[in-house]
Image (tube, rainbow, N blue to C red; front, side):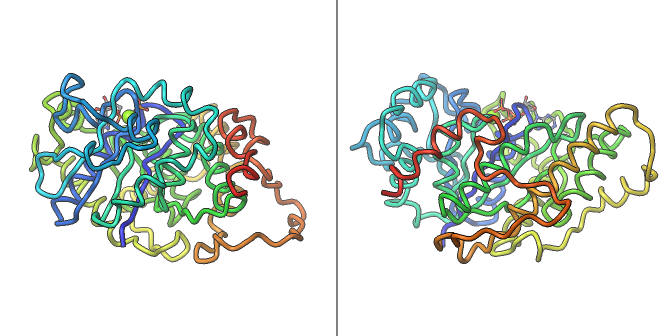
Amino acid sequence: MVRKIAICSQKGGVGKTTTSINLGAALALLGHKVLLIDNDSQANATTSCGISQQDIRLSLYDILTKPDQKPDPVIRKCNLDTLWLIPASGKLVSAEMELVREMGRELILKEKMEEIEERYDYVIIDCTPGISLLVLNALFCCNEIIIPIQSQFLALEGIDQLLHAVHVIQKRMRHSIRVTGILCTMFDRRTKLSSFILQQMTSLFKEGLFGTVISVNTKLAEAPLKGNNIFEYAPSSNAADDYMALAKEVVERKNRDWKETHCRSEYAESAGLAIKPGAQLGEENDTLKYMIESLKPLISAVMSVDHATAAEPEAKTEKPPEEGAPEVPKSVSDTGSSAVPSAMEEENVLWG
Ligand SMILES: Nc1ncnc2c1ncn2[C@@H]1O[C@H](COP(=O)(O)OP(=O)(O)OP(=O)(O)O)[C@@H](O)[C@H]1O
Ligand SMILES: [Mg+2]
């Protein structure tokens, strides 16, 4: 059965596209049939696959905005034998406006993909930053999400909004989606801050954090300029090893929830040793601690969903929160995020 994974983060520039193309390529090299979907009007994943904007006749924009547009004519073959791409073009930026009056507009991609998805082992969707209608289409289409987090100061900023969105989609919208893992990207083992953040992420997400860490490597930034993935551009680089290790871990994490997955981060262990508890890193330390404390209830809410029964109607009576435990907001609108509520509050329209 196909696994559909959205690579998603509310923050820009954290390695979503780099992860999408190189994870996709690594899975293809492992012999899996992979469809990559470029769901970002910046079209970086498309360019990284060696397809220029002048060369695009049909794109994801056409699939989303034209009711009769089938995905097949849009799909392009990439350089690897078992890797295909639905490209993006700059036009995608206007899709949100065009769909604003469309009923069930969050579900368009899911419906269109149903016709073709079983041909693939993996569908990987590179998302635009933030939580927009395009991202909601990806989340409803997928059953899994990978969240890249850059190992730098304020790394966790805004992740609460994304976890709220996942929580609402799981519980209120009754869509079965689980977080396959949080991925630490652009890790620089030479800096104390990178190690500190990885240590904090390990203690916060525990098994939710991939054991694989993606280190900083300029080859990853150079490869897209040649229209290549890292396996074409620098197959013997450490970066290629990192993404191959990630692909193997993703394959291994099939059907596993955070609770069951064993965390094997050597980096995290060495970082834990390198940074003594209570080490002072100035204000950054306090901000991170504050974020971590506020994220804990959300993470347990996202984790506690029984995915096998996520599609079951929610019980009417809710358990009161434990004494002292911060309350998990009932809707994304409680977070102050603007894009999600407008979509979510129409669940009576969506679910009839
Ligand atoms: N591990 C890495 N080492 C060095 N450079 C990296 C690494 N990962 C990504 N980069 C570079 O960092 C920049 C941002 O990465 P990327 O485009 O993958 O992020 P993104 O989350 O998709 O950004 P956006 O939110 O704008 O879509 C790019 O120039 C990319 O080449
Ligand atoms: Mg990107």
